[in-house]
Amino acid sequence: MEKDRYEHLAAQIFKSALEVHKALGPGLLESVYGFSLLTEFELRGISYKNQVKVPLFYKGRNTTKEFIIDVLVEEEIIIELKSVEGLLPVHQAQVLSYMKLADKRMGFLVNFNVVLLKDGFKRIVNNY
Image 1 (cartoon, helix red, strand yellow):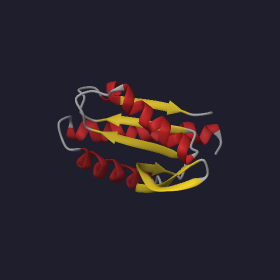
Image 2 (cartoon, one colour; image 1 turned 45 degrees about the vertical axis):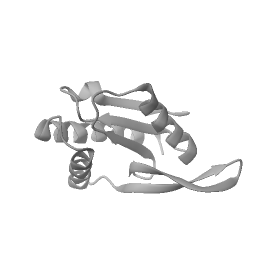
Image 3 (cartoon, rainbow, N blue to C red; image 1 turned 90 degrees about the vertical axis):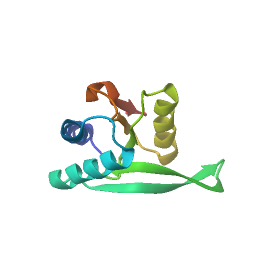
């Protein structure tokens, strides 16, 4: 995917999350924000997959374990949703690990349980 396409999608992801946050505010369950965000993507014509299971390999061997990506946009951008009191470094590390394991270059950590969405919206890149 070209950088221009990544940047366009990144802007659309932020605008979609902002619209959800503006309409619902903080304090709800992650599942409510997830449903609403996916609705925004549909309205904007953004393709996505929800709750994507990815098998976990270690040194070429299948561990028979898997991790679940909350939302995968256009097969390329990972979104991890949260509704927590505050983001911790481990949340950002989780997204980066998912990106490395799934071989993706861009991800977003979105915490809707904030007064201002910009305080809960983190862009993470991997070999971008």
